[in-house]
Image (cartoon, rainbow, N blue to C red; front, side):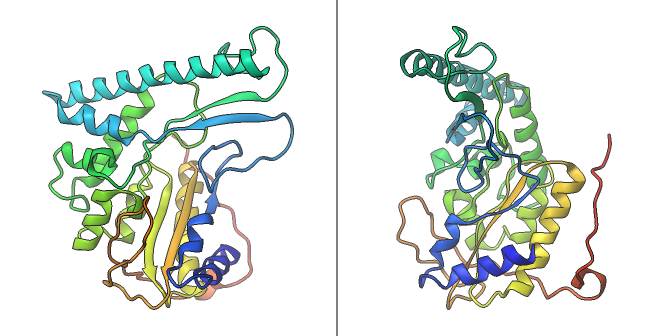
Length: 295
């Protein structure tokens, strides 16, 4: 936690816009094998490959043309499963052409050697366009502005709907809510309805955690560490993988406009970080364990 906070603080100064932290994430309870950068890692053993999707548009489409919530959820599940079949078919084709091995009979059925197919991380990752925005999809459920009450329920409904889809799973397979990579999230953050605590709250019912959060440039490791501790506590108690890509921007204060020149970012405003260095027991070197909550 403290080491990750120090890396984030130091990396923020590599370039004037703090962009280096796009390539670093603090991980909590994240298993090996996720194909999503920068949470992907391998622990050795047999070679495997997995596929990550950028499919927030499936949720936007499903929730835009349905006559009821039930129909919207059914449409999303059907769309996910249809695209998964296409992906798995492509994997089977690769296996035949390149000697790859697969899972669940998708490839490798003929005993081919080589890297095994580890599944699909079907996280509905967005793109900075409203048509490919999870924020848009959540608002189509009926939340007037993401960040207002009702947003947590929208996130939970979306995540639980995704759980109903049948496909070979890998990694998170949940909602990705990167503030700077989602047009609607970026806009709501700029308007002030969406903040750091909101994103942490939504992590409890879905998603990958805190992603591309623009933070004040003077945020130090002592202030970043408590936020990472909160995220790790959620990951441990809920037994789910969570990550944090925090982006302190040098010279920027809370409320300042971001100024990234990057096709995969939607500019927003710097979010306030309500944090202070830990004290007392939590400031010491004592290790502790959080057992996950049992159903």
